[in-house]
Image 1 (spheres, helix red, strand yellow):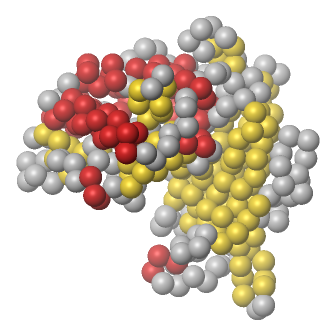
Image 2: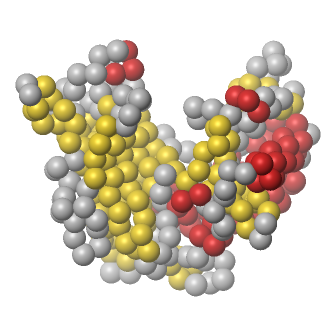
Length: 308
């Protein structure tokens, strides 16, 4: 059966097939790249790593297949891998699950001797009281193993989603800047710092100052380039700012009340979000927002910096 590839962008998918089996951080410390392989059949699936959404499909019946280098979102020690699922028809008011429903996440480590499977999460359906319901019971080592925790699953209250997750213990990863960040507390002082960070980026986008954006996002861009074996400047180029600037007349004014605080990595990554939309959006000739930049910030040495 033929599989469609989901578009994941940002050179992430391309990087899977180009990097060697041992990469080096900025300080030349070798590390092990990790890849998330995603497949879906007749299912709505949202995969996340340490609370950061990595890839999803909302409407395509499939079968679908994709892969993404997730190394920048992992740390040494415990990491949480999760998938939120629903029927493809749930968004139209029909929550019934088809019999061939499946979503699968496989994470592999690129070791010198070859790829090694690290962990799997599998969502299928089983009959409960005469109806098909989602379950993670088909995940290998459901009760846990030496490196993988037991699978936990539950309905997400107030949503159409069913959540399946487990922890995995990893090593051989870089000490990314975000791993050393302070936990962001939702205080008036910190929220003012976050709004100021957005204001500074908004000004740079409004003035189409790509050099300024690259400097603000230097930590994020350099670490992602290291993780994907890319030359300096390639991550910034992959975002397509220059092409979007050509279509833009400036940045959309930020309406702070439209956005809520979103956290990940135990509060070490933060941003403002409105159902996937960023406060940082460019507007077209008609004054309508058409493209956005949605970075994550970390609180490092008392300052909020773009770390992802």
